Length: 174
Image (cartoon, rainbow, N blue to C red; front, side, top):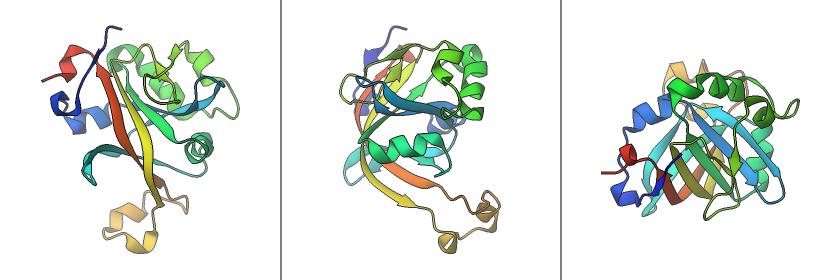
């Protein structure tokens, strides 16, 4: 897919549409072949500590969690939903502990430009991030009753990644 480099100031996206479209989170190291991918549907994007960031959440029970803990970078990739819905659903419903999800879906892993974690050639948007903060969700801090209903004692860890590179198709440029 033909992508161009996009500065954070020129990045143009409806965050709600982007997060709801189903994104691929990949952590690990492309060169060593040690990485894992999962579909995510929760997160945020903005400015924190004066830097552009994306925040993702991963439960400790997910295979990707170990890669998020071990490695210092991750990518968030958006694939065209209408074309890759089946692959996104597969990546979110199977564990990399049990099968090679990338091989099963036929997606093409490519190196990122700035970080060690890989991206996908089929992506219309690739956001490369360096981890800058993480913390666990704490149920005693939930201020709305509906939040606790999302959990069964398997609380997410939140990861903040400084956005160090954005590459996307023209629709993501101002």
